Image (tube, rainbow, N blue to C red; front, side, top):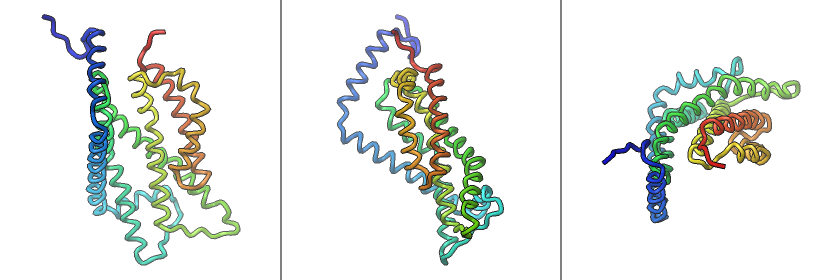
Length: 258
C-alpha cells in the first residue's frame, strides 16, 4: 500500500478530505465559536498587559526614543499627573508592539479551525509575516510620516497661534498613527492568504478598486487621528498596498481552471 504525505495525496482524496472537514466545521455550535473567541481575546489582552508592565520599567528610555520625530519641538504637561499618565500610555503602546506575535498567533489560531487541513500550513508563516509587516508599517510611519506630519501640523497657523503640545496628546497621536500604519501594512498578508485559498483573485481585486478607495478613506478616518492630513497620509499608502496585493495574488494565488 502506497503512503502519501499531505502534499502528495491524490487530488480526489484531498477534495474528499476537505469536504469531510467542511461538514465537521458546519456542525460546530455557534456558542463554541464565541467561547473560543473570548479566550483568544483574553489571552491577547493578558499578553499586552504583561508586556506593558515590563515596558513601564523602561518608560524613560522609551519616551526619549518615542520623541525623536519631534525634532526641536518641546512637550509640556498641564496637570500634576501628566507625566505619569504619559508614561502609562507609552507602556501601553509598547506592550501592544511587544505582544504582536502572541496577538497575531491567537488571531490566526482562531481562524485555523475554519480552514481545510491543506490550508492550515499557512498559519505560522502568516503570524511571522503579519508581525514583520506590522513593524515595517510602524517603522515607515515613525521615520517618514510622523516627522513630516508633526512639522506640517505644528507650523500651520503659527503666524497667529503659539503651539503648546502636551506630552499626553503627542503620545496618543503618535501611538494611534503607528498602530494605524501597522494595520494598514497587513493588506498584502490578508490578500496572500485569501488568494491561496481561492477567495481573492486578481480579477475580483481589479474590479474592486473604486470600492477599495472608498473603504480606505473610511478606514483612514477611523484608524488615524481626526485630521484630514494624517488621513490622506494613511489612505495613500493603503491604495499602494492594494495594488501590491493584486500583484502578490496574481503570482501566488490559487490557480483555477477557466
